[in-house]
Image (cartoon, rainbow, N blue to C red):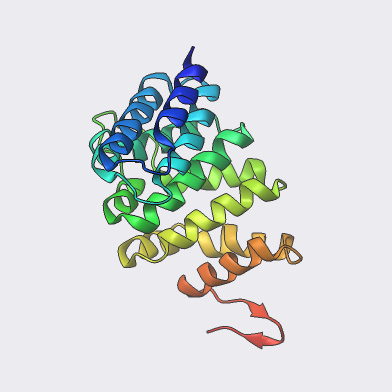
Length: 205
C-alpha cells in the first residue's frame, strides 16, 4: 500500500507542465509518509528516491523544512544504517537540499526535536561510511553530501572538529584512487576542509 502511494505521487507530479503547487503537495505527501513510517526501510528508500526527483529542479523547501524532512532523513539513515539503498538515497536527497537551501544545511547539524537522543548528521554519516566503505555508490553519495556541507563556513568548522578530513575523506582518497566520480568531490572537500592531499604530482593548498 505504501509503495503504491509513491507510485501515485510520482505519476501525478512528474508531467512536463508540472505546477509548483502540485509539486509542493507531492513533497508534503512524501515527507509526511517518511515521518510516519520511517521505521520501514522500504518506505525510507522509496521516499528518498521520490524526493530526489521532486527536488531536483525547483525545490519546494517550505513543506520540506516545515516537516523537518532533513531530520527525518538523518533519522532514517540512523535507523537503517546497514541498508545500503536507504543510506545512498537519503544522502543523495540531503546533498541536493544542502546545496540549494541553507536552512536544510544547518538542520543537518542539529535536531529540532525535544528528544535528546535524536540522531545528528555528522556522526550518523560517519557511522554509515564505516559500514559501507566498500560500496562505491554509497561512498559517492556520502562524499557529495560532505562536499556540499563544507561550503558553509560554520558547518565546515564543525566538520574539521569531527575530523571528517583525516578520518573519512583521506581514507576514501586512498581507497578510490581509480574512481573519478568519487575522487573529484573528495579532493575538493579535502581542500575546503584544509586537508589537501597530494594529487597528480602537485600538492594542494
